[in-house]
Image (cartoon, rainbow, N blue to C red; front, side):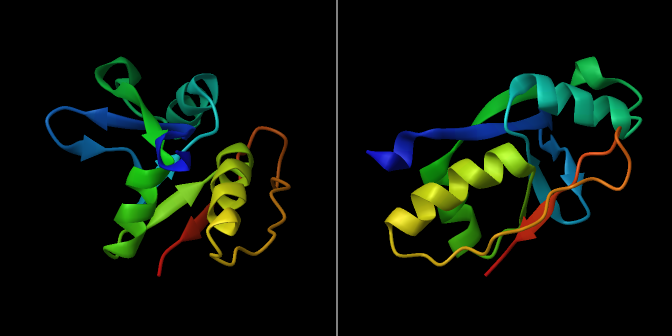
Length: 110
């Protein structure tokens, strides 16, 4: 049942342009956090992006296929908790931003 849990949100600009940090799909812990990330990144038309739920099972499958995901603190906490329940080791990270207006991300790949 944990495969269906929402761990955060990602953004897509149809048909296939996802908001990424380098090669990693960005997953924010909340809808509001994703909107803030798009604004901070200076996305020219943030309203052209659709914010969608990031489901644990889909993210895990993507990672297993070689995908990279960039998590903020809230989404990583949700992801790592569910991953640990499946026996997948997850490290602790310091998500303290460099400046108050920044959002620190951690990228996970296999």
